[in-house]
Image 1: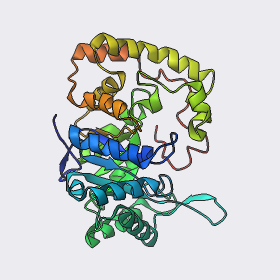
Image 2: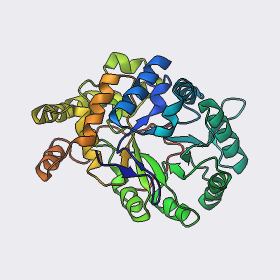
Image 3: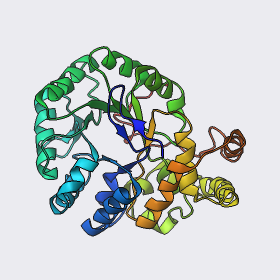
Length: 332
């Protein structure tokens, strides 16, 4: 397994991380024991990066991580920990974005308390407040580096142009963005900007919320999940079309003798040395399938075969609804 660098001068970490949204109940019921089992398996397989957020389960994800560290004190030093803040709500429940220095520090302090640690290795702005110049938001993050509460800073779902603006103020170690064989928009500038600036591209939903696996979610399972049941790619007729197209990818993976999820992870890793996928799962078996991608070498013929069965633009439906698009920056 070849390690990858988190940012221009950052530490070497595993090429794949743990997306800890799954430690909350965003994708279905879970237990702390299930989350602990994923972390145990991550240690076994050499997966060293954990990516979470203060809003995942209203702190539940971070609390589970903190309980795991409390029970396994030596584990903390073996993990590179990232969390995020910036999404908040009014007393009436209306969502908005706050990138102010006071808010970010207060939320980071809460995250540190939940996880029982004195610093994180990476702290992102989860959603950019478009009313604040990104240079000011970057200064607010940089202040937390100076305080010692985070070792590095990042942004989630920003445009390449804003990455460059932020990088002129302080090095941005990572940008988190959805990137997979189903979502190729980062290739229109973000992949390139990250490579140019020495910024890691942390790819969430790398198996397209189960489409790129051997066992994609069933319609019944989708109907029980608020986010997916309203998502265009998981509504008919798009759902059936996407299932039919990805059947070809599952067959290709089977012919290659590898789990479909592992092939999807391997494809991402072959798109650039700055790319670090962070799949989430509640299943140890699935986590092991995902991890096979860290050690899978793909030839030019393999990559061509993947492009043939899943050509750019194959997915039916937008990746977000209009409401879900509030916050992420469109740039192409």
